[in-house]
Length: 181
Image (cartoon, rainbow, N blue to C red; front, side):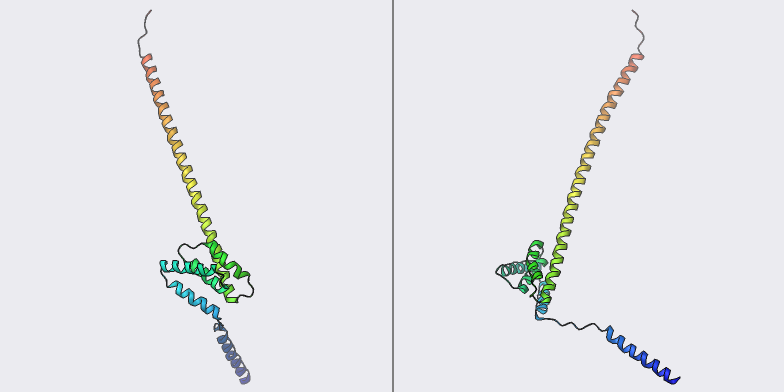
C-alpha cells in the first residue's frame, strides 16, 4: 500500500514539473533583421507627424535608389505610419519582398504583415468611400422627394383654393333670387 502511495505521489510530482515547463513561453530567437525592424519601429512610434512625414519621404528616396529587402520594408513601415499613407505605395514596396524567397524570414514576415495591413486599409477606405457616396445619393434622393412633396402640396393648395372659389360661386348663385323674365 505504501508503494502505491509513493508511486502516485511520484507521478503527481512529475506531472507538476512537466506542467511547469509547458507553461513557460517558448524562447524566441531574433535575427539582426528582426531587431533592426523592431528598433526602427520604436523610433517611428516616437516621432511626431511632421518628423514621421520627413522620415517617410527620406525612406521613399532610399527605396527608389534600389534598396535591399530590409530597406524596402523599413520604407513601407515609415510610409504606412505616416498620416497620409498611400496603400498602393506600401504594397508596391512589400510585394517583391514577400515573393523573394531568399529574404530573411523575419523581413518576409513583416512584409507580409504590412501587405495584409495595407490591403485591409485599402478595402476599408474603398468601403468608406462607397458608403459616403451611397449616403450622398440617399440625401439627394430624399431632397428630391421633399421638393416633389412640396410641389404636390402647393398644387393641392392651389386646387383647394380653386375648389373653394367654385363652391363660393355656386353658393352665391344658388342664394340669388330667381329673376323674372
